[in-house]
Image (tube, rainbow, N blue to C red; front, top):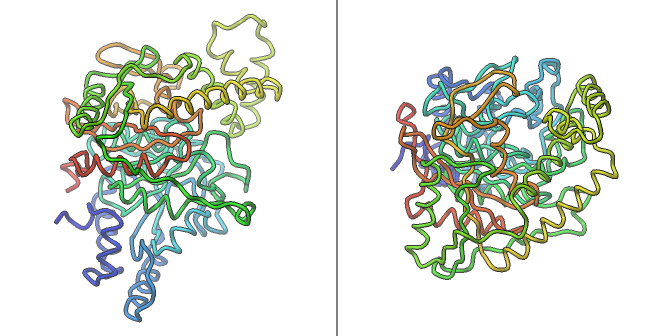
Length: 483
């Protein structure tokens, strides 16, 4: 049997319920690993050991009494720094918010805790959750457990790094431009971006904001697809404003693999994939084909890749503009208004225009998005899933240059750093669910994930396909230095 720290959360909970290990002993096991291994990667940046020990003792007492025990009973877990956790700061990596202490837990944390999870700490993020890396002035730089000189991804980089290193039993992150999916890919764990609106994000916003952000979702990261399903079922469902009128009944994957029609999109001129990444997408497709699934490498939804990416980028920048400091937003307004109406060559000008959209212009882009959503709907009437890369490469070395000075190298060719949102944007702009599973390694031994996109509210379907692929060998494996 794998070591405790590499077991799925559902298996850990089963062990606690069966008395194979005590909740307190399990917590101490993970805390010892944090003490020993976290300094090398700096994934876990805040801890509540006293509270966690008290909760673990209470979990052991509940079992001894014969109480009903939840599906995550006694599982030690951490959460992304951006979630409110009572008594701890929520800063999103912004230095000015060091003193922003949460008064209550985020709703997702409440739901997981009610199922028995023992949240003992928080994991690192980039400033304002806006990077493919995870570093900030408050907590420093997080390294990838496979190679600390490389990024674990962002913005849920600390989440994925802590899981891969065996420092926690389960994690939850957030995703607007791939922030669950690219860390899962870079660190070799599972991650799920839910359908937009499926999981209420209350308690995952600065300043007490209650309005869900366009495109942005919260969701689980884990060492198994079973954990994704367990956590999603616990986190999903309407918040109090809607609960009297809404229920969640997600359709399962009720077809055998031999009956599936799977489209494959392994590279694109908008975001070329490395040979290693494309090869892992091909490997997953070949495994499904070997079980009788019909594979189609030419099928695409009926919109151009360029149109889809531009629509996503415009809406992404408009949504994220709400996070900008007042001074930065004023500068974007000035830049957009001072440019000539026909000025489209400068990326900074176009970015400023999207960051400062008038409601009328946003509505027009939103209509383009709705047309794209219908195109996806028609696509998924013909296909069950779409397989894609998550990012064009495996984890890259830390790069803390200003954004406009960064680039990404794909098989020796340099490309714009920002192009890396392309694969995340396919699902993001259309509010679709997407599950990332470990799919093997590149030539250098770094993990590579593959993204499974499904129809709206097909969350269980994408996760359950990941479960079947996991059983076929596309599973988590621990970094050698973190065994």
